[in-house]
Length: 319
Picture (cartoon, rainbow, N blue to C red):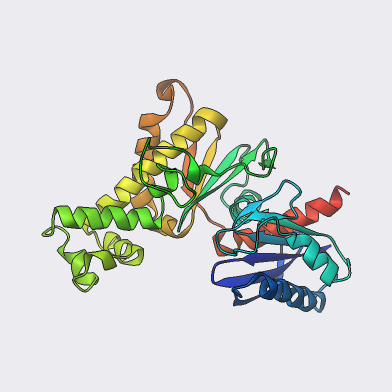
């Protein structure tokens, strides 16, 4: 049995054909179109290409945004304005003549499931994946099942209200976790530290051409790898807030493993060590309970494509 996994990212659409042993048969990438109609058309093209390689039994689509509990409809997406109560699965099924079923899954859930099935999460029972990038995404695998909640809205850890009346968030609330745990948060911390101590921050300022506001996440990552103290401090603050977020999740779900993915996870222990210390500090009854492991993701950028392909296979096996 073969499934097509399609991961709709902000810059590219990645498609891959997988067999039921999670082996990748073929993959290809195209730039992400900017409109819903153009994306729909590209999904059809991807399916037609996949059919030339193997008999496709199911299609899984991974997309950023809120997916309804039916796993067919995009209820909202910040990236595609037209995706409001948008029947993404139905559109593709109709276009391909209902040759096979299509499911839709949130991108963080897809990546988390990919890590659980074929990455660092193999062997875990209760795993939480946190994706630290432009925002803070999450996936909850509880009792070895992907947990979506009653309305498909579970695992929005980026919008945990961590700081009363804190930084304003694009979701309309303030003090959300992702305002302190994300790439933009890393940049905000570093820029604030440079303004506080220009001498200590001279290396970062030099990298940014003298413009503090131009200090980017990539610059901070490179500087931290070279031992720059301000860059390491900025990662330390993001790590502290990441650990606090993990402690809050543990109070609710008690997972055995946290997997950290996304662009910032490439920093490794520069991010994870302060997260581990903060997690231990803020964990409820920390002295009297086992602590969850905190590790970097291992499945790479293909995790979402693999995860959603597997979820699509599982969908048809249960029918």
